[in-house]
Amino acid sequence: MTNRLASCSCGQLTAEVSGDSVRNSICHCLACQRRTGSPFAQQARFHRSDVTVAGTSTAYARTGDEGSTCTFHFCPVCGATVYYEPDTMPDFISIPVGAFADPQFPTPTVSVYESRMHRWVVPPAEAEHFD
Image (tube, rainbow, N blue to C red; front, side):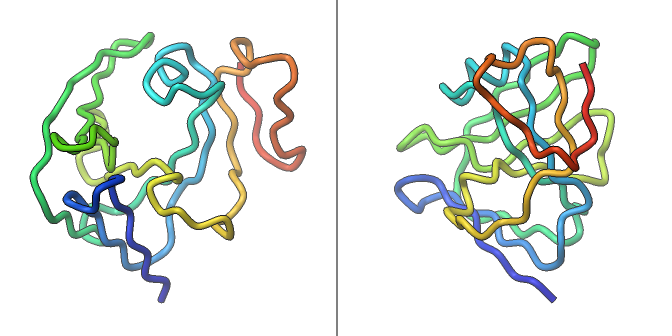
């Protein structure tokens, strides 16, 4: 069984995961670009029962283009997002892959909102692709 630790920059807020992700994706929507300060966001979805959160978070709920809401949990000290909860999937928690600080993290298998993708970004060819 795979164990991973996601953390904010200062280490105050963590999410420990046991088990593999059920989805590993990249999103090119404008909201994810703004949230991450990057041309896309990469996140991994886990069963809630496989995630243990420790520390204090501040929550921010955002409604996306399709009407669903995600509640993002970030560290009130350093501001880094460590996990988020999609309201349409209460049995799951998503974690930004960068919070694991693991260059060996598995390759994304899904790429969404590619119509908003920066022209120089090249998602993995074997991933599922959605506009």
